Image (cartoon, rainbow, N blue to C red; front, side, top):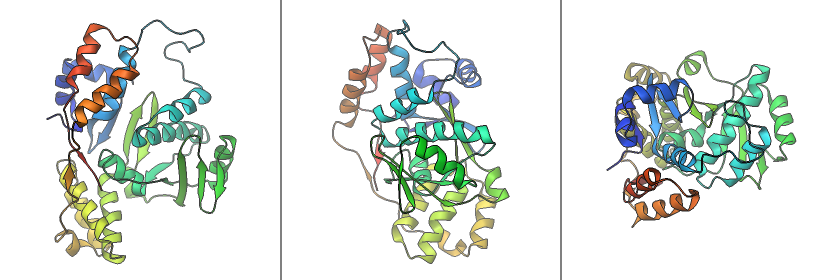
Length: 296
């Protein structure tokens, strides 16, 4: 069974490349990658979408940008609108938002439920994007320019199917040092570190008596146990008075494998590809029947 998140060796085998080739693609920013626990990690969903782009006709369409030049905001917003997968759609949007705010020297960091969604590879369902951001005036200005409307604490763009909230102004120094960096389509996204999102769920479990959050904390630990800094996690849990609960977490959410999920995914991928060459066609066929997906 193909894993939902892979290291360099695993992604090289999955793609049929040498490991050196993978590192070259990473260095050139030509493959979707994230860094967790100091190690490169590759999300299967993002890699599959990347493959679709690769197997499309190679001849540039009139009006497309030259290779290596940044895509325009309008083009990227159109990609957000066209992307069906909720996790990928939100990552692309956050990459675009980050590109805009970094012009002013400010980096938004994904926190809350969308961070859980990322670390569970889409297994956790959430309706909005929570970010830590220090300049709400700048955020509001950008979102208004992108046709978002404000309703209470949230900003909405129903055409893009994006809802965003900035419940916190920033992160602590320790949290900033452990941020996960994700790259997709030449965009960069910053996500709160795995240990800190576990603590976030533990706080809800202990102090708000949210059993579901406790289960998701355990799920996060099981998925990322090799990447977690256990000394830091223990330190933070003791600071937040959740250490005893951490040792007695409830079972994680049950895993579910929908029938014929792989075949359905294959059909969706094949429909998106525009006359792929023989190699790409064979690659798409091999995607059938692979992978489980956890649901909350």
